[in-house]
Amino acid sequence: MTSLSSSLENMADHKNPSAADLSPEASALLAQAVEARNAMDRAARDTTVAADELRRYAKFSKPGQPSAHIVQLRQKQAAARMDSARAKQAFLKASQAFVHAAGLTVPPRVNLEAFMEPWLTRAS
Image (cartoon, rainbow, N blue to C red; front, side):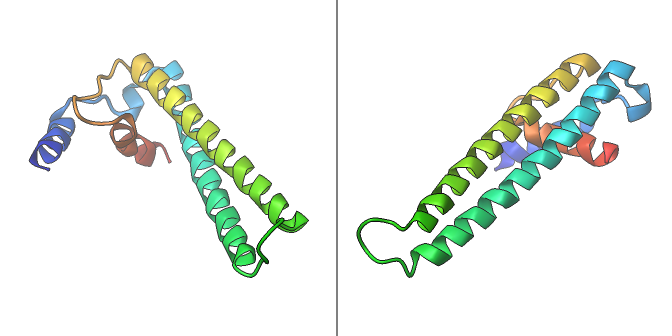
């Protein structure tokens, strides 16, 4: 845990350009990362809603062949999971492109999502 806290402290000490210092390309990529993050949050909520709905109906289902409604709920849940994975992939791709365009370096032992959090909050 101390290595994580020291990495986060190093991240805070790391000289990052301000949002005003970013190139137009980096600003556009940051906006894409914000949109992708919002899509990732929506997909996570959709996945949770689908899982809750499936759990609610599956609790009272009879053993044996599942009903058509349960099958539809499982398909809905699978689609929500796929959307969530696609949204996360889009976010990571946009974040990586932003980091590259802005000339930033992600500190060791800090994942890209954690590194992008301050940038996302500033851009929102």
